Length: 237
Length: 131
Image (cartoon, rainbow over all chains, first blue to last red; front, side, top):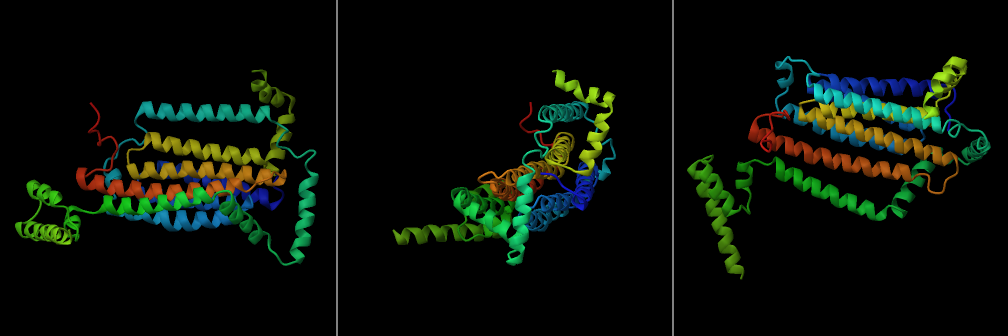
């Protein structure tokens, strides 16, 4: 696997962009700036995916990460106070233990990487297997004449692999997403919203009235609803 | 242990410069791995050093992306060596993206609940379990 010509130029451009944007994500004081830098880092990584021939994953990355997750992040940053980090104008990297741990980890990683690459030097280089990609490229040219694009074919292979070998994990992932939706709705709802629900728990009502967070009218209305639920269930049984 | 010092020896011989220019002009699998490792290290540094819990979440996303880059690079590498199920890396990446989205939703819900109760999003102020 070796990139040639313009591909290598684009590789270095997007790799450096991803690294610099990642560094700025970690170092920006304002959380909104952090989120914007993370978006550019994610887009650069998506471009690297395109260079690696994974167009479907690049599209998913842009749609899900940039379009979904990062918008969620920005919403939450706006909900909690934005300028908190800026108000406390202290040194950003001011905790020596954590900074030392990070530097040690990075050094370990670089050390191990150089060791591994030295050990396997030449194994990644195309020597005998150079013929295979050339043959594949020739095949691709012939396939291009049949007007089946390389992109759709790759996506098709990913899809069939996803449904053939990863069918069970796929279902489990959908259940996970359902649980995540229910969980985040439950976590983000306030006490008053909980009280406004139809199936309010009588225990929650007594807890909230003990905490003194509600007006008597609200407690009475909720208690009436809770009681009505009890009556309803008794009449059913 | 000897092979650890071969870069220095190669540099002395001057052939490492040729290797480096070759590597810059024609990036192979190892360059992708290096970039992914650097992204991972940046993400870990963010998780360890930042106080804002939202920035810590964003650093975790960076770490997951580094892992995705590794998966995709190895997937491409296996495709060209004619391995049987070479797109398994791409399938795995889809699952990682799904789990990252679920994690972000739950984590940000937790952040909102936390901010409502404690009025802070700084991890060093949230020390109820510390003694």
